[in-house]
Amino acid sequence: MSTTGERFERAVQIMARLRAPGGCPWDREQTFDSIKPYTLEEAYEVLEAIDNRDWPELTGELGDLLLQVLFYSEMAQEAGHFSIDDVLDRLSTKLVDRHPHVFGEVKADTSAEVLRNWEALKAEEKKKRREAGGGEQAKQGDGQTPGAEHSVLAGVSSRVPALLEAHKLSSRAARVGFDWANIEGLFEKLAEETAELREELNASSIQGPAGTGIAGSGKPQISAEQHERLEDEVGDLFFVLVNIARYLSLDSESALRKTNRKFKRRFQWMESRLHASGRGPEQASMDELEELWQQAKRQEHA
Image (cartoon, rainbow, N blue to C red):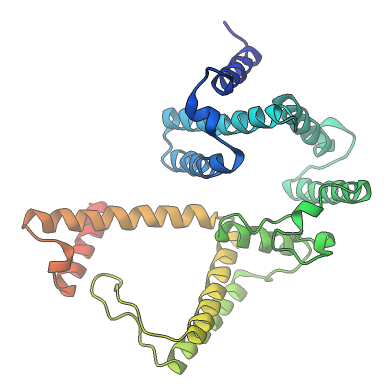
C-alpha cells in the first residue's frame, strides 16, 4: 500500500515526464498564461461538484485542480523560479505561523478570535515583506491605490469574480466595525438603492426591455452617459445584495449559481413542452410562456 507521500511523488514525477523531452507535445507547449483559463475552469467544476454533493465527481475534480498546481510548479522549476517543494514548504510554514492557537501559545476559543489573529498575522507578514523590499510591488497593479497597502482592504484582488470581491471587501470593512447594526438597515439600503435606480430610469425615460419572453430580451436605446449612470446604480444594488448574503452567512456566488441552475432547469422544461408540439419559445405568446413557467415551478414541488 502506497503512502500519501508516495502517491504525491508519483503525480509529481508523471507531470515532469509529460513536460520532459519526448513527453506530451501539448503539455510541453503550455505556458503560465495558456494554463490560466483551465485553472479557473477546474476551480468552478470543483464548486459545481460540491453543490451537487457528487462525491465521486469531486474526487476527480480535486485531482484536476491539483494538476494545475503541479503544472505551474513544474514549469516554474524548469525556469529556475521555484519547485513543488518550495510550494509545500511555503504552505506548511504559513499554516503553522498563522495558527499559533494550535501550534503555539496564543489563545483563540472562537472563530471570531481566530479571524482577528489571522488578519493581524497577515498584516505583520506584509509589513515584513515591505521592509524586505519584496512582495508588494507586484500588487500595485491590482486595482489598488499606490500606498494603499496599509488599508484593511489591501490584498483583496480585483481579478476574482465581482460577487466574491464584494463579499471580501465588505467582510474586511465589517471586521473593523464598518457594518450595519442589523439586517433591517440593509433592507432599508436596498430600498434606497432600488428607488435611486427607478429615479434614473424615469429621468432617462426608459421603461425597460421591449422584447418577448419571461424576462424580456430587447435592449433599450440609451446614451453612453445614461448607460454609465444605470450601471452605477445596478452595481450599488448588487453590492447591497452581496452584503445581505454576507450578513446571513451565505455565499452569494453559490446562491446565484443555484438560481442559475434552477432557471435553466425550468426553462428547459418549458422548451421540452413546446418542442413536443413542434414549436419553440419564440413561437409562443408571453401569456403561454408565463403559464408554462408557473407549471415548471409547480412540477418541481409535486
